Image 1 (cartoon, rainbow, N blue to C red):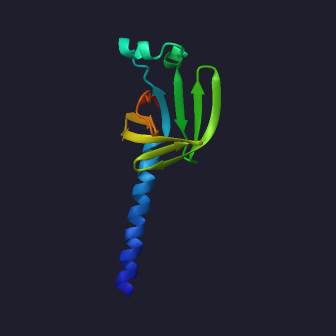
Image 2 (tube, one colour):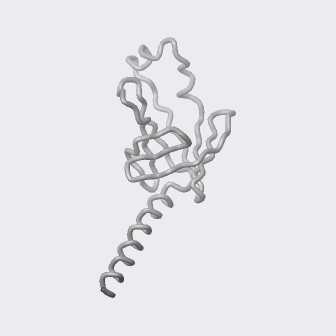
Length: 125
């Protein structure tokens, strides 16, 4: 019985350590890459505010599970939850496509694939 308890405690420790490692890997400052639109994408975006892709966006993920967002002249804060394949920022859910030491790739979680952009960020701090 004592051995089982020891293994359970070790397993829990490894589990929580691995979860914390993922969260700590997102902590820092990330800037959004603004890709150039193709002709097809420019055609689809007619009638929308196409200037939004050129706005500088910076996300600062803090160790206390808050994120500071700066989009152009707008600034706000929200809570975030990081799961293996999901990133929740405030009340918006994003599919977590890639997270490593210098890149973050997310996509708005939606029932529709049409018009959903993939956002790419690079670490700046």
